[in-house]
Image 1 (cartoon, chains in turn cyan, green):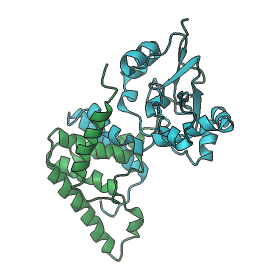
Image 2 (image 1 turned 90 degrees about the horizontal axis):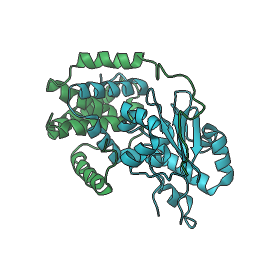
Image 3 (image 1 turned 180 degrees about the vertical axis):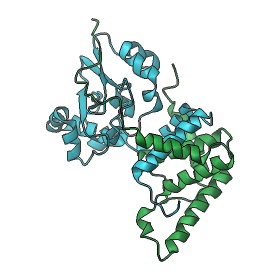
Image 4 (image 1 turned 60 degrees about the horizontal axis):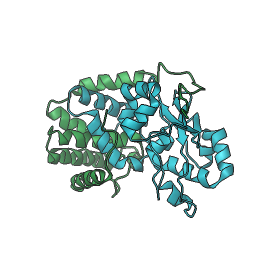
Length: 198
Length: 143
């Protein structure tokens, strides 16, 4: 075992297999694993998406390219790779709030968002967010979307992975890109939260 | 359906607790960093199983040290390939976790091998290849 070098694909599959067995055997719960992963998740991925969002907030031309072709625009910043091939960014506005789900599996643009939280993968979230998005956002995520705003739920698939460009918070005019990136949360790019306030 | 949100203070305390645990382990490159999603997953699995009392942390620690030691001794073998290029801290982490769980009879290595083959044989998103170009649901503005 020590000299055989496993490919990333093999070892990722092994971790996935181990997790599924451990959960089946009741060694721990998916929630417990999620909570632990959450401690470090900002070191895996969402900071990349946050940097993209911050750039879009400060550079209108980049934002136009991002909305037109997220895969290309992210590649400009050296971001891309496995499972990020066909990313589509949907922009939140005063009139429209977007939220992403995957109703069949758990497609997720992880090059920009890091690991999906387990709740994203659970059938309960997937089915309810499609059926009653306004209620789920309010009750489960504490995110009240004004009645004057339309909510659009986007279904990611392996061919097309959506993520959300949140609105820039008010009162951030003086902030540079780095400071702005610090306000962008994973949930704000899923559409189940808003960016932090400065 | 609660439990989606974690209070920031709670997160900070959880992190301090985990940092105390990992500070007793041989460190990879001096800091806790993850290059691949599976690494974080493997990391969380080991701590979660410890939290539920499936082994003592010292057992995991010894198992991790042993896996790294074996790798180091194979590196000294003049016939070995250039193993330095293949150093992966979390590869050892995973090996340590498997070993400890198997020692306690919590998992069987054969079962894990089988399950891994199954995962590898399943095409990614096997049943979900089609692009969806419109929102799947719209909740219109109400005022």
